[in-house]
Structure formats: structure tokens, C-alpha cells
Length: 180
Ligand SMILES: C[S@@+](CC[C@H](N)C(=O)[O-])C[C@H]1O[C@@H](n2cnc3c(N)ncnc32)[C@H](O)[C@@H]1O
Image (tube, rainbow, N blue to C red):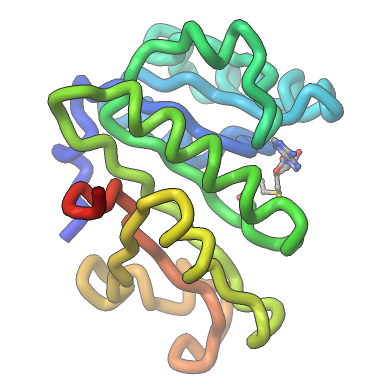
């Protein structure tokens, strides 16, 4: 079960932050959070800055940086390691899937002696899409987290009165250590 204590004092990076809501909530429960979004959308980074100010979490935000999935510039190469990587609604365009997972794999590999966990939500947009082959390629494994485990399946969270029928999922992705 995911509980807020899990994130207390942990180092977290959020990918594709958009409004920064996920990272800001993590900061609210005591994590140290780096918010990131694409180099191509500086307006998202500006939005994150404003939302960080409005929500009074500046002290727990370690930075608001451009980070484009699949781009390994000097800033990404020199990034510290993280306990958690978070993202929500970033798997919406199939052409980006490998870029996201290669970035995740790179960031997980930075953490030599500890397990970095990537939590991500996605909405099913096309039943033909799958990340299974890409997970294998990047030596990642994926556990499906049941939203009922933490009352994440209620209509106020899913935005649907038909909570049983919505198509939002939560995944926990880690490194597949036993593959050589
Ligand atoms: C659907 S929005 C989700 C935003 C936010 N995570 C949320 O749940 O509200 C996708 C986000 O990914 C960012 N994004 C799109 N392509 C990207 C890329 N290649 N690298 C990094 N971020 C990207 C967009 O700027 C946008 O903020």
C-alpha cells in the first residue's frame, strides 16, 4: 500500500510535471522533489513555479528543471540519484514510450545500492498499446497496483461516477535485477 509516510524525507523526481501537482503533493508530505518537464514547454515549468509558490512548498522543491524524455544532456547525466521517480499521464503517445522508459532506466541505474521505484499512472487510450517489450528491453519489471488498496478507486479520485469502468491504472516499475 502506498502511504504518505513512504515519501517523507525521500528524494523524488517527477517527469512530465505539467502543473506539478503530483510532485507538489509529494512535497506536502515531506519529500524533497525535483519537478521536470520538456525543454519544448517552458510554460509548464513556469506553471510549476507558480503552483509551488501558491502551495507554499518551496522549501521541499529542490529544483524545477527542463528534462526531455530520452535526451541525455549534461544536466541529466549529472543528476543525483532518487528514491522515487513519479509521473502521471505521460504514456499518452506511443512514440514517447521508449524515451520515457530509457530515461527511467538511466535514473534507476544511478542508484547503485538502493532500489529506485518508478510510480506512474496512465489512462488506457488504445488497447493495442503495450510497454511489455520495452520493459524487457530496458530490464524493467512492472507491478500493477490495485487502486482499491488505498481508496484510489473512488469517484472523487477517478473523476468518474462509474469508478469500476474508468481506465486509469497505477504501475510500480523497478529494475529487473535477475536478468544478466
Ligand atoms: C498529459 S500531460 C500530464 C501532466 C501532469 N503530469 C498531469 O498529470 O497533470 C503530459 C506532460 O508531459 C510533458 N511532456 C510531453 N512530452 C515530453 C517530453 N518529450 N519530455 C518531457 N516531458 C514531456 C508535457 O509538457 C506535459 O506536461
